Length: 514
Image (cartoon, rainbow, N blue to C red; front, side, top):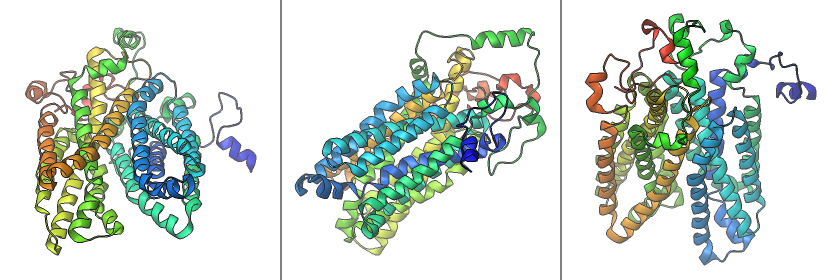
């Protein structure tokens, strides 16, 4: 039995020509998406499950005086945010320069496990700070590599739906982790919380070790065995759409393509990416969405306590309207795949602005005020997760557009997806850091009303680049329609089979730039 398990996990040396067991299933799109989503769920869960526990650990295990507990809780949050901001660009660069996404994916999990053990057993401030920092580093790597692995696996035409499932898994983790952490700690004690976390890590380790990247699996597959399987919930494509015509390696077109893949630019890829107005717009949209989604963490619990007299349980449950609408993320991703990300990102800010601003009407107690608060939070909760799913699709398209403009292969064999997603993770983490600070400082100094309309104004201003730049410049739309067109508007397919290699009549109808 042990030998069989060792063989399954590929820990035993084998003939290079012999495929690993269950190769078809371990390299399937469905399994890779499941593993990536579970990895992101684990990352967020391990961050959130200890949030209700850390104050008691500081008080009872470390011996911090009660009046200093809030200070050290804030320090631990800041340390995590700093690691999450600084690490992803570096992780993206390293991932794009390594032959396999799987290796950093697995190493990040072991770092996450180490951080969890440090937080569990730590009896000093230094160990808790180091554990939280390591948790932030691991989290940045997990998100960056997960998104790059999704882009490698599902390709350009399905990236939106795959990102939607990823967004959903993160939302579920955000929803259940603090709740379970608090309940388990209250009912079963301190260590029970970490037993739950360790059990999740064990499952995650098994999934990540079983995973085989599709490009690795091709070594043991014949061309006839490479079938482009649809994503769960996607309509099956026709054979014409799935087939890729063979090309003559001696033809001028193929020689030109191979030559272009050898191009290298002295400029680091991350700076090349930052020269793209589409990517800069996507970075700003990511920062703004993260800020608008997390600003309420600092002010909403205290607001409902002052107005309605709610306990900590009620203050926690009030975030449900913000999180539950994110279950529609796969549908938004599917729309972005077929119609492009411009409209969802634009509507995210355009609709979110009045919903956020109208929260200033919640200024006294009463049942109607509770209903109004929940309704506005639900509408805002639908708008912003819708935007984050679509803006992730835009990151993928923007990288493809830059590569098309600079020449296919300009970013090297592994491309630059991980570096782009590293920028996404950094922008999102920066928004998470600024959001609560913005809301807390403005609400304290100028009041609830000013805080609401200032956030609404930010949303309205952000709608401008979202509408004009996302998917390519809006004023080039008519010029590019029906053409392979502007490289910034119509990127190549992100799969291993480039869109330019498919005959015009067989190309899938995907126009992310329009």
